Image (cartoon, rainbow over all chains, first blue to last red):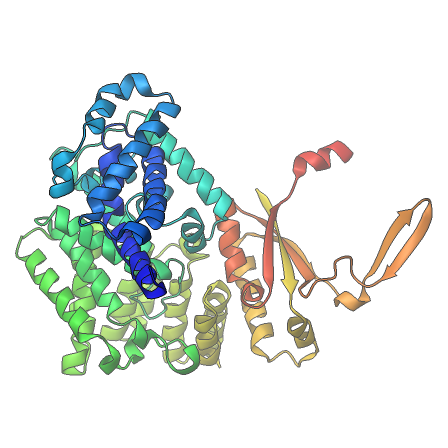
Amino acid sequence: MNGSGQESTHRTIERVARESYGRLVAYLCAHTRDVASAEDALSNALLAALTAWPQDGVPQNPEAWLLTAARRSFIDLVRHRQVVEASEPTLLLLQEPPKELTLSLEFPDERLKLLFVCAHPAIDPAMHTPLMLQTVLGLDAASIAHAFLLSPTTMGQRLVRAKTKIRRGGIQFEVPQERELPQRLDAVLEAIYAAFGIGWDDMAGTDQRGRELADEAIWLGRVLLQLMPREAEVQGLLALMLHCEARRTARRGREGCYVPLSEQDSRQWSLPLIEAAERHLVEASSRGRAGRFQLEAAIQSVHAERARSGRTEWTAITLFYEQLIRISPTLGTRTGYAAAVGEANGPLAGLAVLDGIEPVAVSAYQPYWAVRAHFLQMLGRSAEAVDAFDRAIGLAEDPAVRKFLIQRRG
Amino acid sequence: MQFALLIYEAPEAFAARNSDGTDPYTGAWRAYHKALVESGAYLAGDPLEVPETGTTVRLEQGKRRVQDGPFADTKEQLGGFIIMELPSLDAALDWAARCPTAATGAVEVRPLAPAAKHRIT
């Protein structure tokens, strides 16, 4: 086979791997709960594909081919791990020759169960997102570690520990019952949103960790929506992420300098993404079950409106924030509310909201100090403003944000 | 838990020490130090003189071997340290990431070893 043919085979393998990874892992481990073996089996299968497909050509149904190869390797692996007794019936089931499988793709999509397992309350919340990125999307420990500011070894160990817990800890592979669904779904949504990265929305937006995972998070959001098409909050989360994503290029000016939302050139925002976000948000609202992510998406929707009207309806934003604070009074929400109040009713009003937040909570919270500095500067209280700017600069992680704030401080 | 931030600076960062103090790097450091102190995590710390002022001593077969310059011959050199009291490594890594030198050099986070200290004190 010539070079370009080989290249396209590699691309096919990459594409199939990306699209099928989570489905195959979820299917393989749904009964044995052995996530690690399922992943190993699938990498063996992908490795085999890299040798076989360039020679024999890409099979008609690549996913079925991978499943067959992975299944074979999986059975060996699980046997080696000596958990045979418990899972023997399942293994026999898996072993049945999948004649029809090579023709059609009739295996159940267990990814939803896998997502709920990854965000199970018995698993350390800090590991929910990394587990999803690895088991559903196939990201390696090193790239996950990078986004989470951890060493690859530490991340690798924590992932192994979490998977052992899934295998041995009696965590069920199932979609939670109606009764626990809202809470359990919340954990799944939180984990996806954490992958997207925080700090996109407010003027101070600083935390750039996880930014490189934004695409992966949107992918996870789409998978979840495909699996739970009727959940308003799932659609709300997707709308929120798409709104923020629409502004990605506008967030950086010439030479990579930081541009706060209120100063972004709205012509640089992606209209197709904004429209997609709006469609999801409208559909979500039609279900009549408001929630945190829909409210956050609604705030972003008001910001996006500037592309059409040329102005920002800050009063509308404060109203959404008031609802949001009622269900999710986080430091981020309260700071965002203060910023909106300041824009709507003047810096003194905004400052009053900030003063209502207990000082010990904000000692290392960068956006609070950036917003505070902004208001103090508007009020002409220079000495206090410089002080707040210094705190914001000192807490900033993104060099571009740091530079921006140093310029503003003067 | 107590952690040390070991701050490894590039030659340009050491050179910035000769500036009048209005350069962005020094400004960022001033702000960082203030934020760290105000947060309550700061215990101690100091910058070190430039690497060329270092002298390395070894005793080989009873004889002093004194070498002009720092111990390690690397581009980034230890430029200072900070000792912090924090609840977890994750919190220490956050502070390391905020350190202005993290963008131009490197910042190593190491827990202090109180058990090892007890053995010798």
